[in-house]
Length: 427
Image (tube, rainbow, N blue to C red; front, side, top):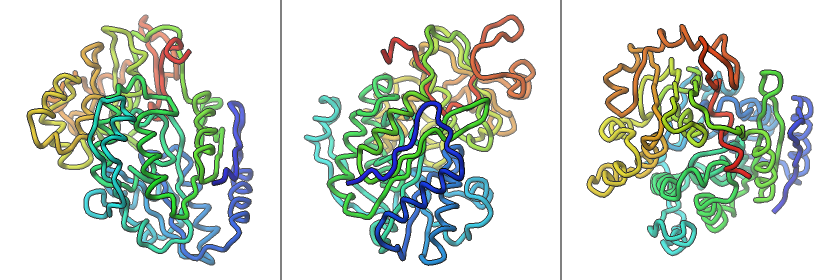
């Protein structure tokens, strides 16, 4: 197990030239010339991870002498269309090199995490077993090199995104996706977000080390920060061991945690249409701010591109049926209804997307895309996006505290880039 590269610091800006030299050095140090390569990048919902340009570079570097395929780590997301592929990966990779992960039918069971381990990891909160199902493409494709690409950033389910999650969930199966999400919800999101070692991470690492680590997988992990309003690459970590991931987490916790000294009374979050088309994704506006919003505060979600709740039709139906109504209501629904009990990732999402009655959430949508009746039907308040932006204009607002019409607000231009919390909770 090896960490090939650990380059990063809170003030570091890794240029494209430096990044390419790092990637070249890693490939040169492999000690063999791969003939069949699989890239596991995120999809367009992680547009700003830098994984798209990295995948494009690796494809161009390796494809002259090897077959190079790309299997976006969709998890439960729908397959990328051509427009999304080009937005994420550029114009040059042939479309027929992109494969599609099917989390329900395209996986094979490779093992089971026993219930006693789940009980141990969760401190007794759950005690079910968990099937480890992985993409047949990854398992049976005969690849002699697999490169898992992605960004380390605070995550509501696992604590810090990426590493073994990209394999166990990104190209994993329904049992692990459902049960790991529910595990995270059962163990209290506020104790997980932004932490490296969590019950869900322990499950993923256990499953990966025991059933998947024999595959030739290396992780190429980024940490993205901001400098003068632009996104920059603060860290690049390459390896096949947990130490590589831990070093990246330590940097992300310095770069991507926005720790405030007082709760926010009114928070305004913008969901760019390039990245957010559903509340399944757009509720990062809730997940990533829930810890810092004041009791009886307001969360205003500017959501011009949101037109559905769940990207998967069945999950969309479940969200519409049960709504974002807090932990007690969701747990009761799980106990009493087979449909939500068989889709525990949806149940976890409903818990994560609720304010637990502590503050108000207003989704501001285009009524032609998602109506007032639909939004209020799942438990949120609603406002017309076109009317709301007359006051809260994303073109004029800047990240952080400011005053709008005599009212103090806190603005976030993209909730996917970090976690907002109180300093005392991470002391």
